[in-house]
Image (cartoon, rainbow, N blue to C red; front, side, top):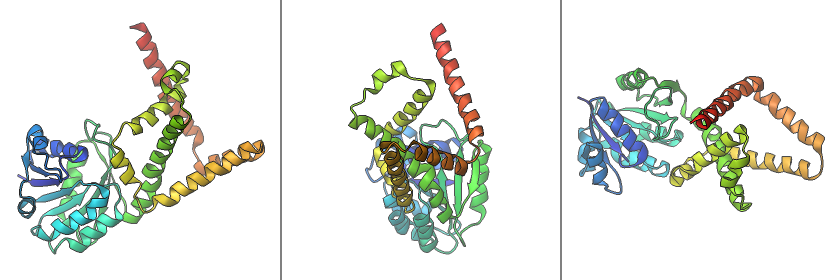
Length: 296
């Protein structure tokens, strides 16, 4: 039986993986900086009262702490791991953790950067994407073990180098979250009555506003830490700059300039018609859902 210790296992993501690995028959122990033993009791797993002793005895140590704490935790625990074991992280930034695992994991200890592209509200791995960032010189049997395990439950595995991962996530995560949270903040600044506006929603508006609400319903600590991606600042600055440029053209009555910006963005985007068709399917599904509700 594989023995796994989840550092940060009392948090939402760590608890998700505790349940997952327990369901696979692994012996699971969790530890959290807040010492919430009751979380372990609720999950039906052991709480690691002596974290370092548990590190030394575990086959796998999974680091699921806040991004800003991840490198320090890796520095503390990796040197204490035994040969043949695996250290892996599940944070949304990869350059720092991968570098730390390569630096501090002793000879014979494997390392794997992972980034689950889903939140702890998902019921299973089916249809979900997980990014692997293998650590140079620290890859062996465990990569295949973990990959096979996740894929057997329907997950899609993508392999990226740490730097490319962070550049990609600066847009896929940090920028999109930033945009949604910005819309939420603008609604507050305008003192806009979101609930009343539901009466006048088109399906497109309803879907968009639901995604804003979805992000706002999440843990602010997690979403703030995602913005710490070292590549995210450039993405945010580009977003704000283009918003201001678009705003200036509109305020100046430069409708041709506005249209030109939209055309250029569409040309760069590529596949806009396919995106329209995909979003139409989502919209039509929402319409059918409303129709069914009306019949009840």
